[in-house]
Image (cartoon, rainbow, N blue to C red; front, side, top):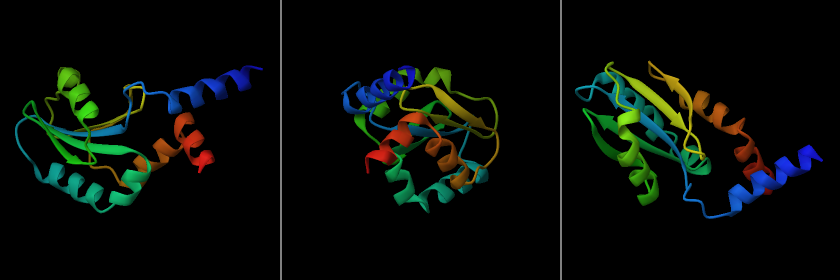
Length: 134
């Protein structure tokens, strides 16, 4: 019974318009576009189709300025603008993976391979439900 309720709840989240239209990756640097930031963006741009399959939008947040990089949407950008103070970093590089529920799922302090991010996303219950529907 509990499994049935959980499955129905997840399906209702997927099918209802709650304003969650994508997962987000935010690449953050305190002061400037560093070589690590550029390296991370390059790695993500080489995986555009896999990002799209997983509804992953990519943004940079450099010195408090948000910039859409890949798969951006108005709702996602508005969410990040409104909440960017939660994500500002004083380090050279910080990367946050944000789920459909707007919660931070994983944070990194170094360049991360896209497949590591995809593995985390693919293990999420809502993503598994999406994959089962297709």
